[in-house]
Image (tube, rainbow, N blue to C red; front, side, top):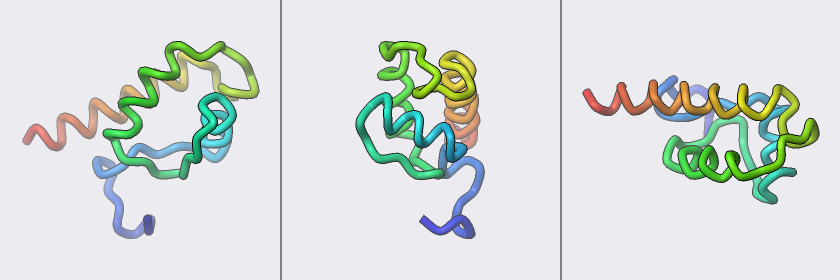
Length: 80
């Protein structure tokens, strides 16, 4: 995905550290920009993952809350 073609509501933005932590925690590849539908499923999965610094460099619940905040913003945008 090209950053120039994205809006705040098209994607969920991840820091490099968060993307790397999610890769370790879930064994999946993550990019700095992900689709909201994928990240909604990821948030649910993260609630079951151990709170370890190598998975959550910014803290487990802070990470989940930030992802949920972005998902809510995307939902409000698409709700119209």
